[in-house]
Length: 221
Image (tube, rainbow, N blue to C red; front, side, top):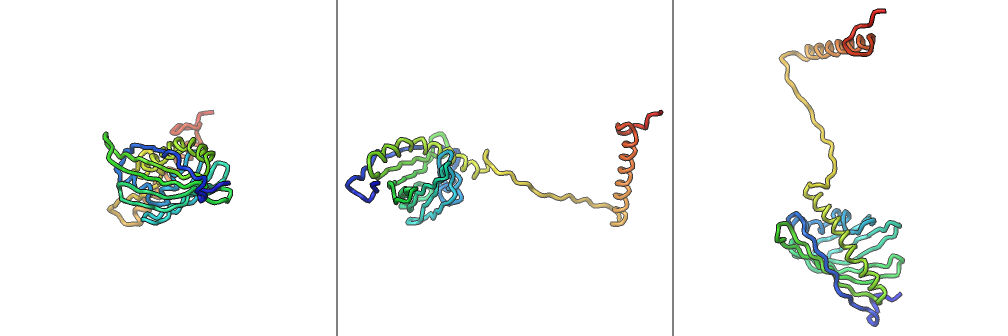
């Protein structure tokens, strides 16, 4: 298979451009790109997962993501941050690795900008340019790229909502305690509670001895 290090056959298809408006400040949308914890929740299309990621938010820092297909095949993108102007824009220079172990398949330069949307929120625009080894590869890749990005941005939208504590949230079980003060000694309170429990147990026993309905006496024979 021809690789991207062969300049005789490398081509550069038209860029892919996608955008999305998020109901969140741009600092928060930018932050969703800033760590492996966030990237693992959203940086893949439907059916895929991200079991591994390395994100170092600095120029020259690593941006490496493993996207696992439904069939269990790992697709790695490996690169670095080429530009970071928080929270306005970032650029990632990366390449896609052949899952069969043959090396890079194509390279990509991903430019992401964050700006105020006209109706409120944040407009995020992505422009991705490619260098691809061979026309057949370019056609196959570009055919699914816009839909793949659409699905990926759906997941990013859910992650931003989760970060805001919005619709997508985890359930946390809290703990609480109750306190009450009594004008009595500890022994007096203990005896009062014990007597109350004994009285309740006696009433329950009387109910069971009746016809099954609480508060009724046994029927006459």
